[in-house]
Length: 315
Image (cartoon, rainbow, N blue to C red; front, side, top):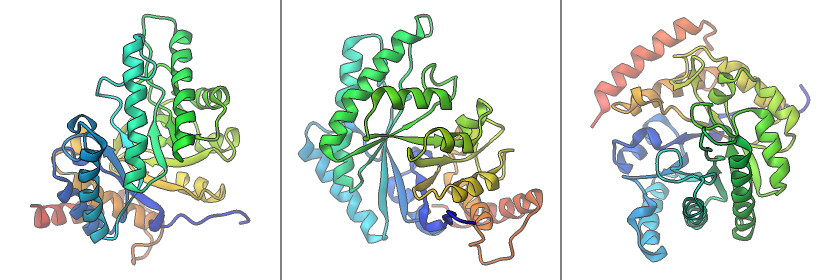
């Protein structure tokens, strides 16, 4: 088919946030055992937390240490994803000091991204107070994103804005919202990340995003769900194969990040990553075995294999 761009494992990345209860070294080891080289690096404790450093020189030393560890394994950061849903960070916040702190926080993250060697920075719209008019919060979010997009351009950074689930935000949660915010900010330095779980929760289709935002889809967050969840691939009901096909048919050339970050996997993120990896390799026909078309049979096989690997290699 004309325009098809094959999605390969070389374009798959892994989000580090599920390893929040493990060391950065353990995360890299898990990546290595699963055969990955591309990292979407979550900036939060215990791996790299903005609040732990009093100067760029101090944070720079930690970044250089982490980069050496990644370089030794042939890995790289393809996108920096600052913690922004749980910490006191909200670019749409009602209070001026909260918004200023949040804007300053993301501005520092741009510098961190450059030092980690990536020109991509993940961002969301923030959330408005639900007992106040949504449009007022929308305006604050739009103004903050406009400021940050201008700073991103000056720093050589592209912001990747993702839509959230309705329980996470009352602002950018649908394709309509994404299209409106992108139009109002009107900057080439604000592009889009589509989270397929958030998309499924509001009953939308991936093709609609490509149709409505041509040339703007620069990143994908992939996980299974029911429809919410961010589950291991194969553990939910989402049409993962169809999503991959849609990406290929739209000649998508960006990265696809595995965001298997449901809290049920925090005790054993390696098993979750390994099982998702095997599932994805089957979908992409890169697993070295015959492609399995029976979802239940594949899930059972991968679950058993992942369980054996996890118990045999943890530590």
